[in-house]
Length: 412
Image 1 (cartoon, one colour):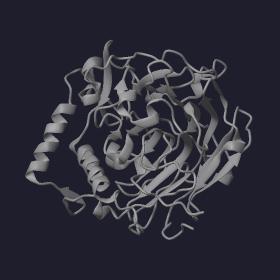
Image 2 (spheres, rainbow, N blue to C red):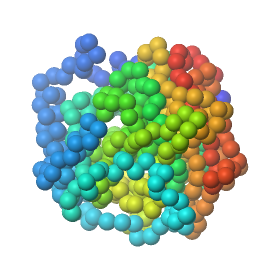
Image 3 (cartoon, rainbow, N blue to C red):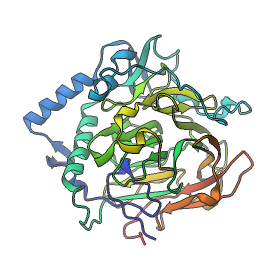
C-alpha cells in the first residue's frame, strides 16, 4: 500500500499504513525566497534576533568540536526553562528506575561510537553543553511553523513534491513506556543543503498530528555544515503548534555535562567491515512521568522532556513506537542515500540496521515480538527494508536503506 505523508518530516506520523508527501518547498514559507535565500521583513528579522538573544545563555566555557560550538551554561539557566510550562520546574537528574534489560553488562562499550561524548571532560560541574544556535536554524524553524499553520488545516491538497521516503517497523496500538535499540551509524551522501538522511526511533501517541518524540542520528548539511551523522532529537505536542529539534526552542532539559545534542558521531561503519553503532533509549520515568533520553550500554542519562510539554495520554504513556530510516529530498533530481546507501538485502555489514529492540510495556520489558510489528515502507526503486526474526548478537533486527537517486513517481 502507498503511504502518504500528511505533515512535516520531523513529525512523521507513525500510522503503520502511511508514508508521507509534502507540499512544494516554495509553499513552506510566506516570506520571499531569492536565490535560495529566505528574505525576511525587518520586523521578522528583529524578532529572530530577539529569539537568538534569548537562546544564547551566558557560558562559563566554550567547546569546539567537528565544526560545532557548544556553550557550557549553568544547568538551571539552560534554554529549556524559558518554556512557560517549565517556569517552576524542578530538575530531575536521573530516572527513578530503569527497566530490565536496559543495563547490558555483558556488552563492551568499546564498540559503541562514544566519540559523540565531548572530549576533555565536557563542561564543568553544574553546567551543561548547549549547541550554539545560528539565525539560519531559527529561519528554518520559522519556515516549518508557517507551513504548519497554513497547510495542515487543509490536508486534501494533492501534492507531488518534495518527497519523504521512509522504511521501518512499528508496533500496533497499545500502551508503551519506552524502547531501547541499536542503530549502526553511516554517513549517507546528501546532495542538497536542505536534504537530510536519518536513522531514528519514534515514540508517539499514535495520532497523525499528535505528540511525539524522535531520537537518532541525522546527516543534514544545512544544519551542521558537514557530512557527518549527529546525535539528533525532535519533540512536538499536539496540532503541530509547538516543538522543535534539539535545543532550538525551550523544552528538552539537558542534565549530562559531556553528551550534547547535535554532537558528531564517528567513526561511521565501514561497508563489509567494522560496524559502529549507538545504543539509544527513550523511557518514561514511572514516578516523575518525564520522557528520558538515555545513551549507551549503561543507559547514561542525557536529559529529558518534561511531561508538562505534552498533551493528552502522552503525559502518561505512548500508543506507538517505531524504528527505521527517513530521507527528505527538496525537489532536486537526485534523492539522498538512506543508511549506508545500499539495499537491505545486502546484509548487516553492508546495510543500515536497527537491532536488539527492547520495548517497555506496562509492568514488563523485553525483546520485541517480531510477529506483532507492522512494516511501513516506500515502494520505490530507491529504498527497501528486510526484517529478520532473530540475529546472533541478540534480539530482533531489520536492515533498510538504498542509494536514492531519481525516485520521483516511484510511490505505489
